Image (cartoon, rainbow, N blue to C red):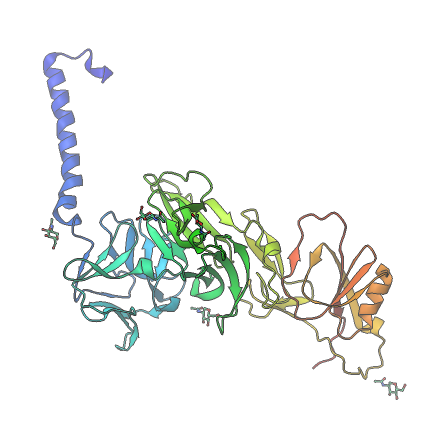
Length: 454
Ligand SMILES: *[C@@H]1O[C@H](CO)[C@@H](O)[C@H](O)[C@H]1NC(C)=O
Ligand SMILES: *[C@@H]1O[C@H](CO)[C@@H](O)[C@H](O)[C@H]1NC(C)=O
Ligand SMILES: *[C@@H]1O[C@H](CO)[C@@H](O)[C@H](O)[C@H]1NC(C)=O
Ligand SMILES: *[C@@H]1O[C@H](CO)[C@@H](O)[C@H](O)[C@H]1NC(C)=O
Ligand SMILES: *[C@@H]1O[C@H](CO)[C@@H](O)[C@H](O)[C@H]1NC(C)=O
């Protein structure tokens, strides 16, 4: 504005006209496309279809914050029928259909009045549709909250993706008691993994591992404690993620237990999501809505503080696979590593089980070699597998502990701490590295020097 001060009247007039004109053009550019079709843009008509391909246009929410359609998976010609944050570089997936199984190019999704959404493979075989539809669908809608809805003729919802969450909740989404989030297998494999986030019927919110084959839930590694067997009106019944991005457990007496500890970053400027990560950590994360860089997602809060230590179910492998060792990275997220002389069972699954590169066997060895010649020990410190003990010796010495393991064909590992020796058998579960302990836990990891098997 300062430049106008030394202007003559006509000059000022021109400058103002110029300013108005540029604003007018700006408004025309901005408003015209917006008012003409953006308002109903999220309305998906019956019969609408998307075919999975590199240039398949998704169904967008009015603000374009969310998209529904086929999201191409990295480095594969596979597509996941899903909902994702459309405007940020990560295009983070928040919901997926078909149990997370991706489909090949040429697959189609169709909005069908009777079946809702139907996913077909390229040959026309039906792969997936939503369950529990009772009434005919008039249209679909991708909403700005990230909820994909199938609506009846009177615009009431018949089906909503918010009622069938996968691994993520979004602001304005509510989980009722009995609700579950399942982790995915890995960052890029959306099949169900080992971890669950469940609001139990008694009102307790828990995180637990499970047996993937049978769905048997193991002991929880996080509990909200919002269950009161003596007075159920004190018990929780909903996990609420409200429009201010605050998460809490609502009790039947209308009191609540906060999950989000402080005021989260403002929803006007930040996207929020709460995800059960593939590694078992549950957290609320935020991401700026606009940024010239790619700032990624930051933590509002996470549970548990140390999943390597807190997740110790008596069955199952724990946070990492069997024979693996869990350690936290700087974001309090677990990293899994095979011990020396062990390697990944599935080389593509870093969080999976490890197998020894040798065989421990109680068969007589006919090479006439002594145990000393056959076996060696790797010495480690402050690593433990707390549920694998089959013998405890006390009092004993470090040397006795090691020798006892050497001559014991069942012994995979021995640990020693102040006169105590624990002998442990395979498969080793819940392996964890302690960040810092008072005493020093010595670990003797037994391995076979020369494997006799062909
Ligand atoms: C949007 O759809 C509704 C319901 O079909 C209709 O009444 C309204 O006129 C539409 N608005 C625009 C701007 O097309
Ligand atoms: C994802 O993991 C599951 C379970 O381990 C496996 O069966 C499936 O083949 C994987 N999918 C992809 C696309 O890699
Ligand atoms: C249960 O707890 C509520 C408070 O949440 C209290 O008002 C009510 O009296 C209690 N009922 C019983 C049977 O103790
Ligand atoms: C809880 O709040 C809802 C809505 O505000 C109200 O309808 C209900 O009566 C309340 N319940 C109790 C037990 O206070
Ligand atoms: C092991 O020792 C026995 C007797 O001590 C001998 O007969 C046999 O040949 C030896 N085997 C090998 C592989 O050296």
